[in-house]
Each structure stands twice: as C-alpha cells, then as structure tokens.
Image (tube, rainbow, N blue to C red; front, side, top):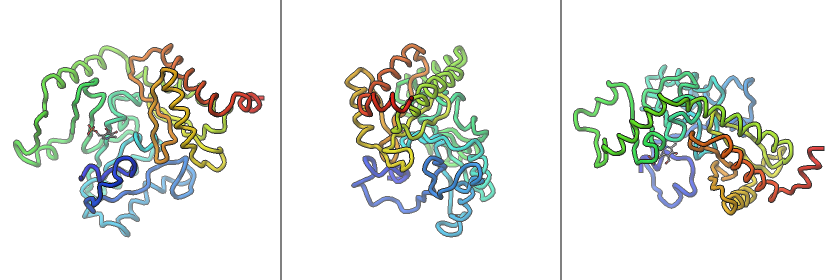
Length: 300
Ligand SMILES: Cc1ncc(COP(=O)(O)O)c(C=O)c1O
C-alpha cells in the first residue's frame, strides 16, 4: 500500500485501491512542456524546485518529511527529463532540511540515459538509489543502495525477503556489470538518443501531432497532441499508432498522464539498422493515422 500510494498515475494503477496511507505528499515535477505554474525555463529560475519551501509551509512541515523520492527522468509519467540544474536545487533544499533524497532509477538506471545512472547526468548523489529492471538483464532483481549509516539503521537481519540475493539473478547482474566494463554502452545510449531525435524532429515539422520530442540519452519519447498550440492530448491517435506498430511488427508502450506519449527504451545492444527499421514502422504508423498528404503540404 505504501508503494502504491507513491505513484501519481491513478489509472490503471491506483484507481479502486483506496484508502491509501495519508502521509505521502506530491509536488509538481519539472514538466516544462506543460508547466504546472505556466512558467518558462530558464526564466522560471526553477520555480517548481524552489516551491518545495512553500510546500513545507503550506502542506507538510519540513521536519515531518523523511525523504523526497523522485525519478531523475520520469518513466510512466511520460519520459520527462527536467532541466540540467533542477535536481541540484532540489537536493540542496532536501539537505538543508535534513531530508533524504531517494532517486528511483528503476527505469532510468543502468546506462539508459548515457550515464550508468541518470543522477550522474544531473550531477547529484542520491542518499538512496533504487534500481531494478536492467540491473538483472531480464532476470528478476531489484536493489536498494545507500550509505552505510542509512542501510545499517534497521539492524542486522532487519532487511530481507525470500528472493533477496537470489544467486542466479545476482550472477546475471554481475554479467551486466562486466558487459558495461567491456562495451561502451553509455555512448551507444547517446547515439540511440541522437538517432531518435533526428528522426522525430523531422516528424515534428511534418505532422503537428508531434507536440514534444524529449529525453536524455537513449531514454526518449514523443508526446502526441491534437494541435501544437492547444496541446490537447491526442490519446486516441496515440492508441491507433501503437496498434498500427503492433500489427507491423513493432511493440511500443505508451506513457504519460494522458497515455499520449510513445516512449523508446530499447536494449542498448540494438543495432543502428534495427533502430532505423523500428523508426520506419513508427513513421508509417504516424503517416497512416495523420495522413501522408497533410505531411507533404506542411513540408512545402
Ligand atoms: C520508476 C519505477 N519504479 C519502480 C517500479 C517498480 O519496480 P518493481 O517492479 O521492481 O517493483 C517501476 C516499474 O515496474 C518503475 O517504472
């Protein structure tokens, strides 16, 4: 219930499971494309991060807060990568008030953003780092890593579970780490990101449905909207495009509050040719749903 209380995505995760523990508070993220405060970066001076001080006055007292938890790049939330200086401000505020900063890198971890952890790209050192997914290279494994004084606090045997330290999963994770030492996956993530950005920026000029192109390293996404001015989410069209992709051999997964974001988080062993092939299918899907003619007219 505590972890379920943490997610901000109501459907399909939380709806119908209430009541939740009440002492979980949520503050708006640095979602610059749809800023909760109608501001623009960088003139906003990271208002959303600094607004935490206000939250401590109006919502919950700072001394009542044990930890601030954030994904350095939102996963389910729509692949939102905050401005480069956002986390520096946030973490500084946490430490000023003696609050731990926990980075959930379950999606953004293990090279996906061009650094082993996205936190590194933001120049921050979380007090606790949560990892899973790519950590085990496909085998079930999750990790909670933190400074000894934090991790040892529960006492010997205080943290455990049936599958903790599962030997097979741990062997897979060690193999993952070996591969990171042998191969330059971090550069591959950046190359993948560039490849995606080049193609999707072209699409953005051709089809007004592509509202935003964003990401960090190989963690990339497009946000689909009815119009680039109104930014009304194009949820139905997104569903149709993903269905088209599925029927043409490409499995995609949506994200975002309005399920209007198509995300790309492919294994880093993918080749350039395979990526192009996948992007070709996605492009045909957009053309099929949004019309090829309009695209040509827009280009001219
Ligand atoms: C950011 C993030 N954190 C945590 C989780 C949950 O991780 P686990 O399935 O290991 O409990 C997920 C998705 O599964 C996720 O995307």
